[in-house]
Image (cartoon, rainbow, N blue to C red; front, side):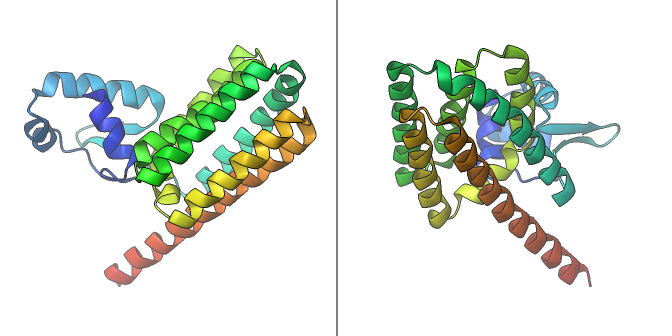
Length: 214
């Protein structure tokens, strides 16, 4: 149940701001509303859905300012993690991160956006784990959870998927050279490209909504 909801949010089946219609969804999935509610509570705790009294659950919606704030906080925290992690990296850990990058590429080639998002998350967090800063890692996970619904907007483009590949390769090159500052720079560009693309998509959606209403 939880995985089905994650898939719907991660692939855009349930879009930001959309109400989760529990009766219809429970019937579609062939389950009762009890496990569905439990799954929604877990997602609420992660920040992926929001509960509004007397209205129900909605996929969490961020405006452009919220999105930029989340990515700015990620930049601050992840930069510290990368600087702490790179000097500690072993060759085997770099190989693990490279293997996960290959998983990202494989999912991208197959057009499996949910698998791509999951592998991309493993790619980034495997490096963060090496920093051995568990409190920081928990904060970064909260920030990632808050923007899961928006990754499908970025990964939907073939050009963006190619950009992810190229930027991951640049990160790996910096890690192999144990160049922390180059890794920080490439990862900052990586985040910036994503947030700009999603910002454009959100702005376009808002314009279309206003046009329809007008």
